[in-house]
Length: 208
Image (cartoon, rainbow, N blue to C red; front, top):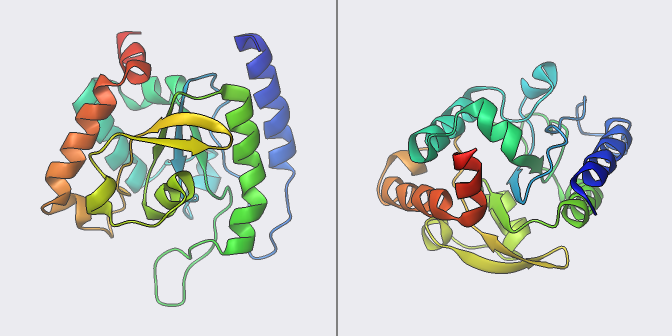
């Protein structure tokens, strides 16, 4: 499929996604990135309470932290990253707040309902590199649970939606998390960002 055809397919899919209302406990609107034709897909967990009003993922404090990581490691600012990397998520609506505080983790049914969108995105884009951000996204991409210390900073090969891809996992940039600000998280995050900057799919973006 040519790049213009992929772009048209993404726009069509986004129109369907915008109309999705199948999860009764999720809080709309649906949030997704731009229909960027890229060999790199970043997969987050779910939008937070602010992203819906901005109409794009990672639009609040966690996003500012994450895009600062990319700019410092690769010299690519937020606008350049959004223009060159397709941003997806395990769930596309805000799950609401958890009873104990913080954002609620999407449940198994909600994750399963949204999985079809990821499958279609993978089929359209045929990615070379997937960047899962946070424990839920890492688990869904790699197909198993593991401590962040065992996966962040590593380059893994995985089969994701029928395609062999490279995987470079990142911790969630949430301000509520201290993992990426303490050891060994600081060192492992720096290693992961160096691997990301050197990956051919990302290096091409940095040169543009």
